[in-house]
Image 1 (cartoon, one colour):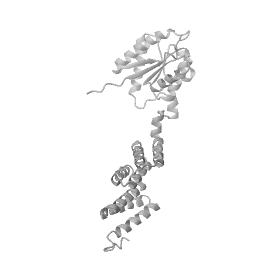
Image 2 (cartoon, helix red, strand yellow):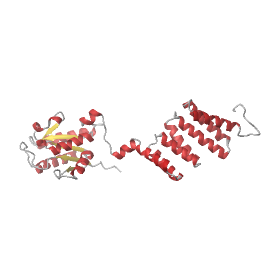
Image 3 (cartoon, one colour):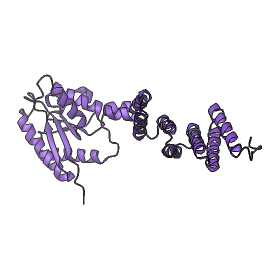
Image 4 (cartoon, one colour):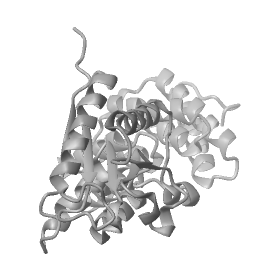
Length: 311
């Protein structure tokens, strides 16, 4: 079953009252009629539904900024009508250029009124020629911009090489969520809750070795050796040179061998600890743990037999 193309959100920032003395179309309803035609042409050209949104209560105070800022950030395509150099439109455009890399299109009925700060950006003039010509330019611009990889028409974000992301997403990618989960686990008095929080931390960022190690240690304390080894093995596949992961794997296998009394498992523990020492030869914990594991393996069959060479 073919998936329907995603709805395209087109936002128009336009003066809510008269567009100024130099405008050919002075009333907003005339402008909206033109952009409705542009929306229809865009929908036909792109083969997907396009919804045109306009902030009709732009001049009201208070909560207007909530919807205005959200629209400036979320719109797939943002069109700023600079006719008359309206301050509200300029504010919305500034917010858009500060938050989104694209697609942002500037239009005006009179190119002479375009503010100096954005004169170097492409501005499509309309209302001074047949509608179809301006509409074709608008649709062509949007089509090409949407098709481009990593498209950026924001001079702010391009020059500073920035990418705006929602706070919740930043919390996750910055590691803040992992740190909070690990901190909550340390403060918890419940072993079950500790493990649950640390599992969530590892699921949030599987590349965070500190969270993975904390989970493996907690699972070792709870004698959940099978799950601990799964957590460590996954981490070692991602970072095979991480000495701490090999060290913890050796400790888990050593504890498992002590519980089960199996020499084969103890030899696996020694092999893991040797890898830890190879990755970090100066790590005192790895060296001490390897020495202890070798001693236990050598004395595993004592007093009947002892491996003096290993000792």
